Length: 182
Image 1 (cartoon, one colour):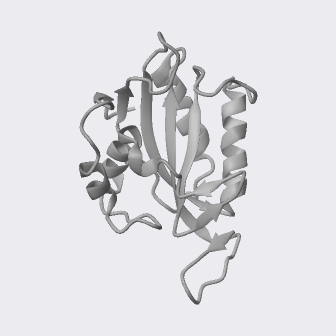
Image 2 (spheres, one colour):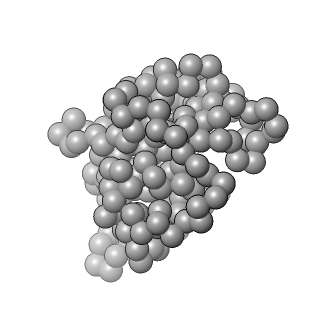
């Protein structure tokens, strides 16, 4: 299902600003994020800026005991095409970096790439949900996103990202800055 503002039609080749989250909790986590970010940059339109947050370390949530902490960051790129094709390309990057396609939920992984939003598009399918359904609940996504797009208003949300972040409960998702220059 596609819902768009009144009077607009969907053009699969429209350039959209797309938010992506990057996470890693296996191996050299920073090197994994760098490699993934480099691959993602190849998907971006060279005429548009690529925005990149700092890298934060987060304790794993919903993972097996003893699971290593995550390094997380957010990027925003321009992408000319439909979000489903972008998600397929992100899955290809994950696969190339050694993430198995079949694995238990929340297993450790060298890279995890999620599509957070694609402009004003709203999607609800078995393959893709935009904006990401848990984006507004995750400090490890909202904090880096607020760093690069604090005034962004996501479809379905009345408040900008900075306000969504401020409204989160304080406990359970403490973040530690790893680096701003990666």
